[in-house]
Length: 307
Image (cartoon, rainbow, N blue to C red; front, side, top):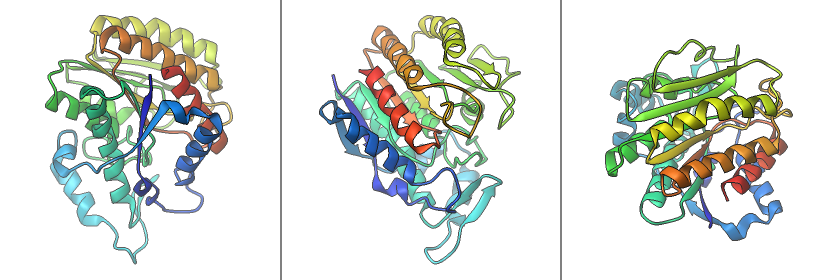
């Protein structure tokens, strides 16, 4: 078995300020650790292609998408603020289109007879972007775009989206909360940005808010208790993963205490669910993770779990 990794050098064009935590070095840290790990023999690396406006329109308001295109800074201009955390510079839009397009590429890969496991090493991330708002470093909701593309282009009826970023995937929830074809599972520190998800009531949403200081044993127990039976019952045709690694104990973005073994464990469990329900088909996309060393090591552990 092998894993196809989708990425593109254009994902590094998103450059805003030197101190912003969501910076191009994140992808370099992942690539460095993949090389050190010796995993090249089980990885197929492919360039992503950009998403189209039509792809974006499936999950975002037309006016919102068109406004981002209209506001894109020129090459000689500085960045603009889309919200208090999210900036757009001259290369941001292109990076975001390739990040969103990677999810489509991964869907095609698993649905057209390629490798059954895929990982999109892309940025900017996406799971905070709602239908009509950029927020939390995110412009377009990459995982939602990929899931909507799969449901539109292929004869599948149900997809599950699992989000283990330390922050609640509010944008993904916003987009799919009323869609009976989508089961959304999110674990996150609470209270913490964006301060959503703890009170959500929906048969399509399984949120696990956990307190600061959460360790891997507690997280694993709650995930196994809440998510896995629900996914088994839902029996998805394809599993998507918003893979955020900012819950690592070395990451200062939050106060979870997860380690590499926890990310390898969740990957193994999700791979087994994919084998049981989806002919092994799984599409994972990078979300958070801002300590460079921990991010690279965690992605390697996750990919080993998928194998």
